[in-house]
Length: 288
Image (tube, rainbow, N blue to C red):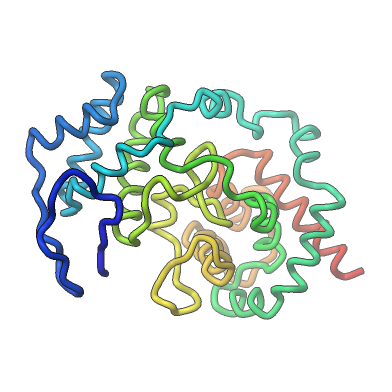
């Protein structure tokens, strides 16, 4: 894949040649120190970013990819993100939680989404064997059928956790490394991608490691797109199957393989209950 560093400033690269790797200044202790001074505002962040840089170095991702990005004016530590981590919606009572998702409007929109995308959903079902209305429900819960997928910058969300949530240290180290690797591989400026307060992105709201591990190029254009429904629906189905979904089955009883696959998508009991309740409601409304 061709990599073009549109954000690079301050350091010179050798000539870019299509189809060849760019020769760039490699990682050195001095380079890492400079980047840490740019991006880390406390000792916890310096430790985490230091390990992230080691992972990027092992993947042959040049430091120049980061330098311009780390000067971006939108980089911030957002305390609102920390409040969301401390008080996730999934911790609400189920009655309060379900009122967010199982509404007449979201059911109506789910029926419309199913109708407009039926041919695609049927094709995904033929390939993966995942219940069509489960995919519609997931799309409704995760991003309101694609209309509510970008509330925070993914980089800022992860950057904030790096500085403020030591209990998430191992998780965020992995996700930031995965995110920057994804951006490099796909020529995506790191400060251009919107997502959730937890760093998930796309209509299916995959965290970076899940996207890199489970996303598929279903339309065959050579790119795994987080905001195109063919790739998104197939990626969600692939994730569920890889996490135990029994192909062709519509058994969602508690602790069944299908139930567990939804739980793996977001390990919260309220989440599983609301996804399955919305699935039933959309299915029933579509039949009417």
